[in-house]
Length: 72
Image (cartoon, rainbow, N blue to C red):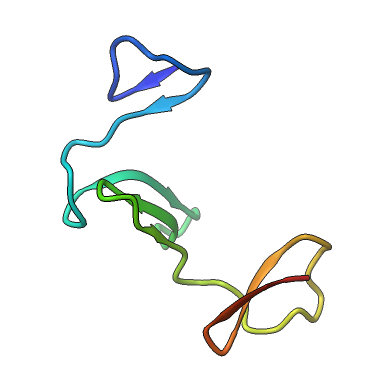
Protein backbone atom coordinates (compact mmCIF):
# COMPACT_ATOMS: atom_id res chain seq x y z
CA UNK A 1 0.00 0.00 0.00
CA UNK A 2 1.35 3.39 -0.87
CA UNK A 3 0.19 6.46 1.05
CA UNK A 4 1.37 9.59 -0.70
CA UNK A 5 3.41 7.28 -2.93
CA UNK A 6 2.46 5.93 -6.35
CA UNK A 7 5.14 3.23 -6.57
CA UNK A 8 5.54 1.76 -3.06
CA UNK A 9 8.73 -0.18 -2.34
CA UNK A 10 7.50 -1.83 0.88
CA UNK A 11 4.25 -3.39 2.16
CA UNK A 12 3.40 0.00 3.67
CA UNK A 13 5.20 2.98 2.22
CA UNK A 14 4.29 6.38 3.65
CA UNK A 15 5.76 9.42 1.92
CA UNK A 16 5.56 12.89 3.43
CA UNK A 17 4.96 16.11 1.60
CA UNK A 18 8.10 17.95 2.63
CA UNK A 19 11.56 17.53 4.13
CA UNK A 20 11.63 19.31 7.48
CA UNK A 21 9.92 19.52 10.88
CA UNK A 22 7.07 21.70 9.55
CA UNK A 23 5.47 18.87 7.56
CA UNK A 24 4.24 15.49 8.78
CA UNK A 25 4.93 12.17 7.07
CA UNK A 26 2.85 10.03 9.46
CA UNK A 27 0.20 11.02 12.00
CA UNK A 28 -1.72 8.71 14.32
CA UNK A 29 -4.63 10.20 16.26
CA UNK A 30 -7.17 8.71 18.64
CA UNK A 31 -10.91 9.00 17.99
CA UNK A 32 -10.98 12.42 19.70
CA UNK A 33 -8.42 13.79 17.22
CA UNK A 34 -5.59 13.90 19.78
CA UNK A 35 -2.15 13.30 18.28
CA UNK A 36 -0.77 10.03 19.66
CA UNK A 37 2.25 9.57 17.35
CA UNK A 38 3.76 11.81 14.70
CA UNK A 39 6.75 11.44 12.40
CA UNK A 40 7.81 14.67 10.77
CA UNK A 41 9.49 14.81 7.38
CA UNK A 42 12.88 15.46 8.98
CA UNK A 43 12.66 12.13 10.86
CA UNK A 44 11.63 13.45 14.27
CA UNK A 45 9.41 11.06 16.21
CA UNK A 46 6.89 12.77 18.53
CA UNK A 47 4.78 10.86 21.09
CA UNK A 48 3.32 13.64 23.27
CA UNK A 49 0.97 11.56 25.40
CA UNK A 50 3.18 8.80 26.78
CA UNK A 51 2.22 7.53 30.24
CA UNK A 52 4.37 8.80 33.12
CA UNK A 53 4.16 5.62 35.17
CA UNK A 54 4.52 1.91 34.38
CA UNK A 55 1.61 1.07 36.69
CA UNK A 56 -1.03 -0.87 34.77
CA UNK A 57 0.88 -0.91 31.48
CA UNK A 58 1.27 -4.12 29.50
CA UNK A 59 4.72 -5.65 29.13
CA UNK A 60 6.67 -3.87 26.42
CA UNK A 61 4.82 -0.54 26.67
CA UNK A 62 6.97 2.62 26.54
CA UNK A 63 6.57 5.24 29.25
CA UNK A 64 8.21 8.54 30.18
CA UNK A 65 10.01 8.66 33.54
CA UNK A 66 10.93 12.34 33.89
CA UNK A 67 12.34 12.57 30.37
CA UNK A 68 13.85 9.07 30.27
CA UNK A 69 11.99 6.58 28.11
CA UNK A 70 11.53 3.21 29.77
CA UNK A 71 9.91 -0.07 28.80
CA UNK A 72 7.41 -1.70 31.16
